Length: 177
Ligand code: FES
Image (spheres, rainbow, N blue to C red):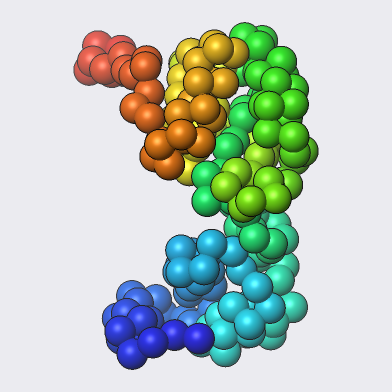
């Protein structure tokens, strides 16, 4: 499952961990980056490299929601409905995204372009409500803006730049006293 270059990377990675078992998370990231999700063969390969049973790898994959055990869309849309986002319209945004994309939680559009996920806090509470598409965060997003993001991806096949960049306040030394 891994090519020569990847095998070399694994050997470099191995030197950073005292036990092979500790490499399960970084190995799973590599598999997901390579093929978009973690299939049976991927889990077997990780189990072999990390010298753990496949059931251990499956336990990790099924515990962390950021690992996908089935194919997701090229553009993975995440809508936060945790407290800050919920209080600022996150649940409404999620319902609108479900309706716009015609899919539900952890489902994928037939053409494989989009998948949708209702997520817990993504650490951007100061910009609530927020959605994310792959690694791009859209904070203080309105229904219309969220809808435009999807339309823009459909027409240009790229993720547009977010309209609002929410800066967190600097912590001054005085703030820590
Ligand atoms: S509650 Fe939505 S990012 Fe924290």
